[in-house]
Amino acid sequence: MTDEGARPPRYVDKSLAEDVFLDDEDDDEDDEDGEYDGSGEYDGGGEEGDEPPPWPAGSQVSDAPRTHPCWSCAADVPSGASTCPECQESVRHLRLISTRPPVQLRHGGCGPLNLGRHPSWAAPTVAAALDGERGVSRRHASIEMAPDGGLWLTEHPAGTVNGTFVNGERVPPGDRVPVADGDTVRLGTYCAFTVLVVGEPPA
Image 1 (cartoon, one colour):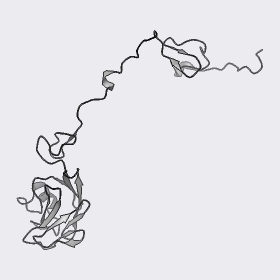
Image 2 (image 1 turned 90 degrees about the vertical axis):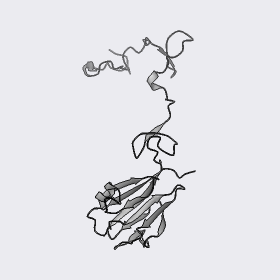
Image 3 (image 1 turned 45 degrees about the horizontal axis):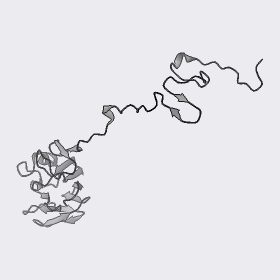
Image 4 (image 1 turned 60 degrees about the vertical axis):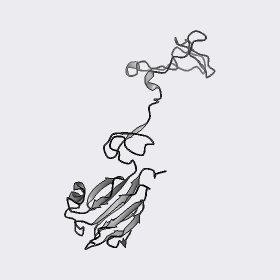
């Protein structure tokens, strides 16, 4: 007979849960590393006055300066630097994203980026990306990031057959017009780039 209200014994299969502490076993025994007094506080054990063990060395916060890879050469650039110490390219740069053709171009502050199909006028990667695009001239337009942070687009002085457009407005041949972050630059009828600026403007 058991006392009225007493909890009947339960069977627990320990074969699938080794080293699991069960609340109905050894309730009255002290942990060898400390004691639990039922108050919600745990006595960590050891002699009085003992200091807690130090954190593992690997868990310390590093004091080394933060870095990020350069977009141009992939070298480590210290956080807050304005130029890459390896290639001297500016951290602030342009991204030109196009879905037709599906290409992304990056360009910093080292002169203008020529857009066109001519392999010796435009960068080889640009000329190859635009090769075969209807409406894009061999020498179409240039985009640049000025030292003061301004962005400018210039259609080739000789003009283009199908035109250059910023947000739908045609750029006259040879004119230098401002471009802003998020603007759309269209070369001819079909080829369009979204201009994105990465990085903080110069102080």
